[in-house]
Image (cartoon, rainbow, N blue to C red):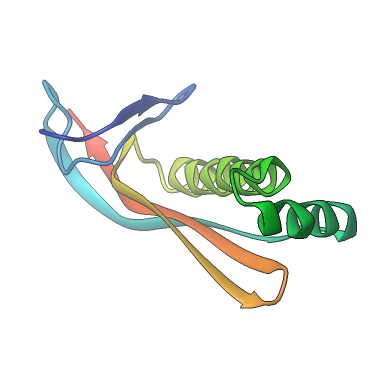
Length: 115
């Protein structure tokens, strides 16, 4: 499982890899996902816009992105729990800006049962 990241949620193993070391996948339950749409808000947008002129890390945007990833991951885990999964493999994030200042963040992976 080279270059994979394992995350242990309260009740769910989540990995970017396609297997879980020491565990046998007994059933593939399908794709699970969590979707969040975030807007930066006026204050973060103005501060971020001014900061982007000077360059560097825009902390107000970083905070919005991190919160969206956490929330999307949480929704993905809830989805997996609802269908009886023990773990999520091949987990990924994707983000798409669909209007100026609004971004869709998706966390997705394959839900599996383990032996």
